[in-house]
Every structure is written in structure tokens, then in C-alpha cells.
Length: 111
Image 1 (tube, rainbow, N blue to C red):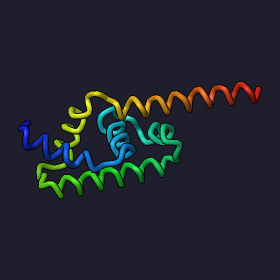
Image 2: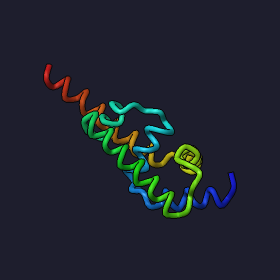
Image 3: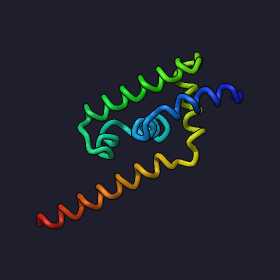
């Protein structure tokens, strides 16, 4: 993929919020299902679906605004390659791990 292609996708990505990048990464790069995303962000299944829909729509809009015309799938593929440091995913994983530990602690206290 050319540098111009990368530049357009990176420019569109830079306009996303941290949460939008995380949701797109978790769904399209990590392959998480909606129930897993819902758990990570402490939302309902529907809430996760709506958040992903909005993030995807905003990303597509940003792609169009910078002149990207190759479609969503090539862009999300490059999005994954441009986020190889996984900082977004790592921060979400920390939140998820904290929630799991909190849930385990709460279940032990109920016994």
C-alpha cells in the first residue's frame, strides 16, 4: 500500500476518539464479538453495537473527508497495521482485566 494511502487513513484515524479507535480495533482487528466489547466498556450488547456502528460511520465519514475512496475494508486493514503498537488495545485490556478482578472480588464477598 502506498504512502499516500497510509497518509489518508492515518489522517482519518487521527480524528477518531480514543474510544472509537478502541472499539474498531477490538471488533475488526482483534475479532471480538459484541458481548465481549459490551463487557469491556460496561455496556449492554445493544450499546456496544450502537457504539461500533457510530464509530464505523464516523470513520467512513472521515475517510471520505480526506479523499479516501477505496472502501472501508482496505482502510480498516491498514488501520490495524498502523496501530501495531497496540496501545489502544492494551489500555482497553487493562480496563477489562480490572473489571474481571473486580467481578471476582465481588462474587467472593457474596459467598
